[in-house]
Image (cartoon, rainbow, N blue to C red; front, side, top):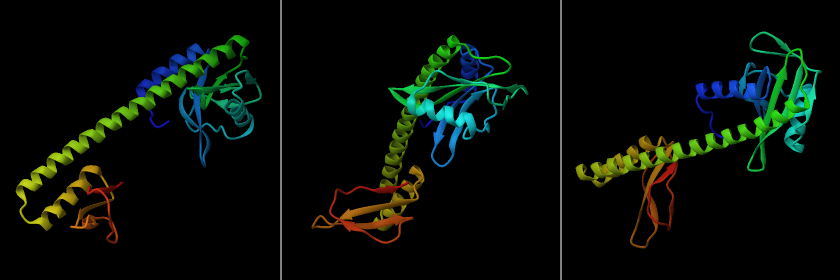
Length: 223
């Protein structure tokens, strides 16, 4: 998953889902390469809560690998954002399109989860899976829109440069600089073909060494 929607959305959503789960606090946990289990979003739990040690780690691993939905224990101590100490933890997988994308942790202070509570938690995990899917789809749509706008702007700016600039070398240099600025690229090169169809770099920015090859002529952008 690639997008964290705005804080107001998640704060309101997680507060509601905590009530549905009948929990004092809940958190969506993701397994990050090199970092272990980390909090993605939460209600009434500090974002730096440690999940990669002890029973929480064992339960999250089981939820994500075995899709276990009936896990609960009273052998934990977790400090809630409201200052209370929670002693009961339940964990369920977060699933989207039949794939486990994370874990849902719910905690209670001074009481235990019932079988009905665990069933509700599993349903909340399914709801969060849909929320994450929508967030990912929204991010992709926004990114596509931004890319389309950038390409349109680049096309218009290049046309303006071509109309105004008469010197071929200056035209290529300005076009290269414009492409780098529009796309926020670290490296850009413009390649032109000779009479034999062989491409060679005529202008570049942020790239070392000239390259040549036979291929369709187009600006090369490295981000």
